[in-house]
Amino acid sequence: MTHTPLLDQVNFPQDIKNFDGHQLKQLAEEVRRETIDIVSKTGGHLGASLGVVELTVALHYVFDTPNDKLIWDVGHQSYPHKILTGRRATMSKLRQKGGPSGFTKRSESIYDPFGAAHAGTSISAALGFAVASEMNKKHHHSIAVIGDGSMSSGMAYEAMNNAGALKSRLVVILNDNDMSIAPPVGAMSHYFSRLISSRPYQSLRSMAKEVASHLPKPLETAARRVEEYARGIVAGGTWFEEMGFFYVGPIDGHDLDHLIPVLENIRDRKEDGPVLIHIVTQKGRGYAPAEAAADKYHGVVKFDVATGQQQKTEVSSPSYTKVFAETLTELARQDDKIVAITAAMPTGTGLDLFAREFPGRCFDVGIAEQHAVTFAAGLACDGLKPFTAIYSTFLQRGFDQVVHDVMLQNLPVRFALDRAGFVGADGATHAGSYDLAFLGCLPQMIIMAPSDELELKHAVTTAHAIEDGPCAFRYPRGNGVGLDLRQPGKILEIGKGRIIQEGNQIAILSLGCRLQESLKAAALLAELGLSVTVADARFAKPVDMNLVIQLAQHHEVLLTVEAGSIGGFATQVTDVLVQNWLLDKGLKFRTLYMPDRLFDHDTPNSQYEEAGLTAHHIATAALKALAKEHLLFKMAS
Image (cartoon, rainbow, N blue to C red):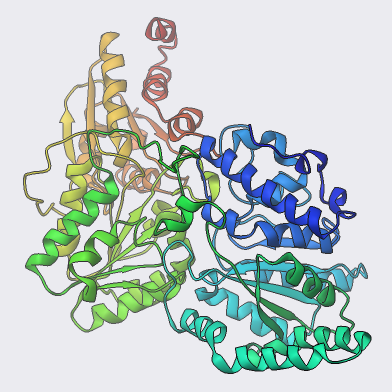
């Protein structure tokens, strides 16, 4: 049991307002230990949270939250914030059903004024709060905390440009920990590193301190206050100043003696206009295994606190992510035109494996999905074969570029959409729910949805062979079903599905990862004496018209099953049925997809159960279509 005598006295930020400096430091250490203890039992985003412990304590001590609006970019560093804002007792169920989200969430607490789990949104949102406060004459502070990795998002600069022009009272805290999920890329990261290590800055600051120490005490105090502000000019905050921000920093984000006076100075500043405070922190701070790890324990499963050893689950089949990466690497050995692109997720997408063998052909563009898509389009224009690996949820950020820069020009950019379907503990923000709908409406877009790891190997191989337009293939989080992957990938016929088993009463047309559940449903129905065909659509677009027509004409019931939102694969199939007058001839047609609502964090299996996309639900839909509800009890038994 973690010993936390001070933290035990804290329920909300108001409880720390009378703490002295020593107590605040002790509280920070207790929050750090509590965070480690919690995540060791639940898993989650550890490294980022450990890096902002002192900052979290300082912000809640200095500012009047929740009246002052504190917005954490992405939110994966918000665990200490949650511990201090009334949610400590529930943190044992972090990222589990009924427990706190792994990100900030408006419906969870008044201390979460803005919920988000995509990077680069905090400054825009905080500016909105700042302007609203002025218009409502509330005069509250608006604070955005954004990491240096998130600053590679173009949206952050759009917001800063607007903030500088509006002259609103906005505070942006740039948390520079030299690492987002992967080591940050681009000139901005190097720029911050130069600022911190620059000799002129260090020597000038030392000289200023020496001069100040010889002044009378009131003047020394004033000089030190001035120095806190002047650091921006000395350190080289010119770029931010030119954006219209008053720049302060860089300062040590783990030194409360330094951090709190700076925050107080900014809080009490009379001048209007936005301020940027550049703090330097260490991701994984205070936990040796995290500090030593390459990823700083960004995202972890349950682990042993004493050793840092994570409880990896033994699996007999590789993850879909790994199958994609290994297949792409194998193809790249044969074709030097293949290049791979990721948006700050080399490990998450598996492209770190590709990069080990082909470092010059793998590009991590930072948290910049819009740029990633158009960059790929430019590569395709000049004869290269780009594979752009982006989580389904993050491709939403690049949708305009998919439409305008890829589809309209009919460029052969290949989109590998990881984490399609429900993703479990990361909840609604990260679920791959909408790609079938937002890509399915685009002319010239080919969409594949492999149903197992071997089909994924075929989909990657097929995407490589498509050279006359864009394509995408989506695959789920997790591991394959255990198929033999030694056979080579094959090029699939575009827009052609396959029959898995044949029957004559009920047809189940499955797309993607729901095939195994569809086969289980067919088995349940077979036990009731019903004959079932199961087909794997393979392609969401173009849909296999001949297959759909065949299933509709030779079965009494046709079901579609997909791990996507309304407006996806079922829409494509419905259009085929309508265009061919097949709904006017007695066919009982039913569609199963993600219900038209959001799903909170839980296990993926539980989410699919709640969504009605398991074998039992599929079989139940078929029985109801046949008006054989009386067989439901028999099936359940």
